[in-house]
Image 1 (cartoon, rainbow, N blue to C red):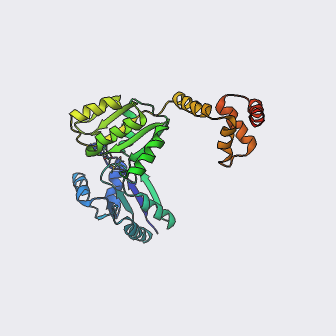
Image 2 (image 1 turned 30 degrees about the vertical axis):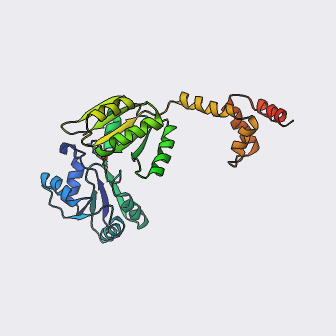
Image 3 (image 1 turned 120 degrees about the vertical axis):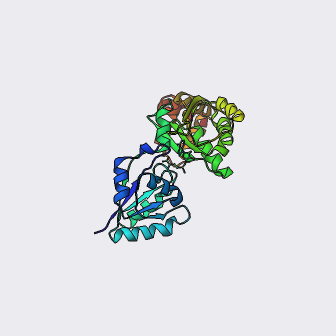
Length: 282
Ligand code: SAM
């Protein structure tokens, strides 16, 4: 009988955050695939877990995924852990899960700590709708593209950042998003946990005077619907109704549907759109 892959979330700082089910599973499986075995041995020693480990990381993930899948097909149960938190969340794991599905191998996830959710819950910002962006790309163009997208994002935004990149990221956020509210969460669940709910420019000047240290999650307020609507209105008002129609029709939207959308965007009736098209063309 085939075994199973268990995605096991481990603490992001405080070792007491490990779940009973993860502890039991790590003790019972045949093998633990760990992102960094030298790091994870500390966790296993702390909980007196003697299960053998193998490494599964960014640079061997494809080849290793097939080896792991083969072992599971032969009947082994295997747990995947990352250095901290939930595997697959900004950590290797995604490929292994995908390959398990392709190969018909069962996967289950044992929930537990994830820095993004921990930060969101204590951010003091809206939690109902959020967008997790993980680390912003280092590549200039990719980074700019993502930042441009984020500028219009109405959901609360969650980012991960390393201390040596924090100031640059705060500067980029300030330039693209403006002076939004932000909660900077540092060293979550650890002894020196800190939360700073303020504005981007405030935290930027703080960190220019106080060198960033430790692990950070940034939770940023999304754009308000009112502001987004106002900006859109300004764009539409700069266009003639015919240009506005062309905007949709060039995207492949049918004539009737484009009229509906234009009417909605401008807060006027379809009849007004129709009339204006006639007047503009004559
Ligand atoms: N898989 C992890 C999770 O579930 O959150 C994330 C791994 S990612 C490689 C590491 C990043 O997560 C860090 O650079 C930091 O941004 C964030 N992080 C992890 N632990 C944290 C903590 N205790 N406090 C604040 N941020 C943390």
